[in-house]
Length: 260
Image (tube, rainbow, N blue to C red; front, top):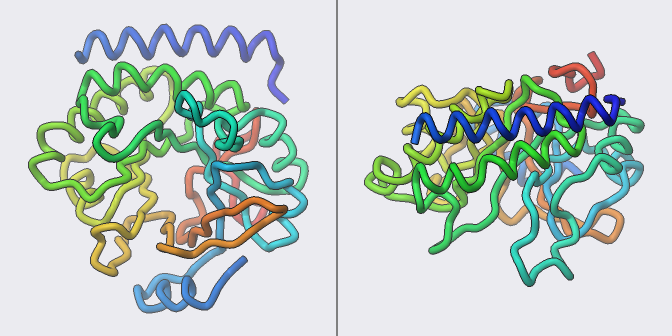
């Protein structure tokens, strides 16, 4: 485990560097497996995502999953009493590591009319510091992506005028502190992000994807595929790549799905 004093110093340095950069820039179910086979891509396993609670690592492992994509985001004001799974904490990631499970990081504070990306570059300036702070506090190493949520079905005009500036600024700030940009989005948005060369890690959701699974998506959140693990309602995601952005606290930046 990373030395606490070193981790604290790294956190402070990283937040300062991120701020400076912003200123300068301005359980496997039949449905999921069938869809993956239709896309011609083998499923390597499944990972969870959740927000209302935190299942134990032992329960996640027993259910046959590889790990989870976890929020490096605080609950919105007023939601603290029921959004008990935000943010991910070091206790959880250490528990996962002890059971041979992995974690990836995702940042999303709000969606819909108040979506994080709606303010473009200014939105990134607001949200990057929290993402970096909470990723590091949970033991997240450098060299790994933080998936940035575009939990919508945006138009191309919205992408061009708001989402692209948001992701570009977010990515530059993450790069300044040794992290990478990943994107959680639908099929068309992934296409636009790829065309702009903004990142290489993608977690796809189904809204607006037209039933397609993008060939560059490392993870696919299958719409409506949920279960309960250790009393917590969780979403199940198919994994298509050995490197899906996963990490363990203070560990190697890349850890294979099969314990490599």
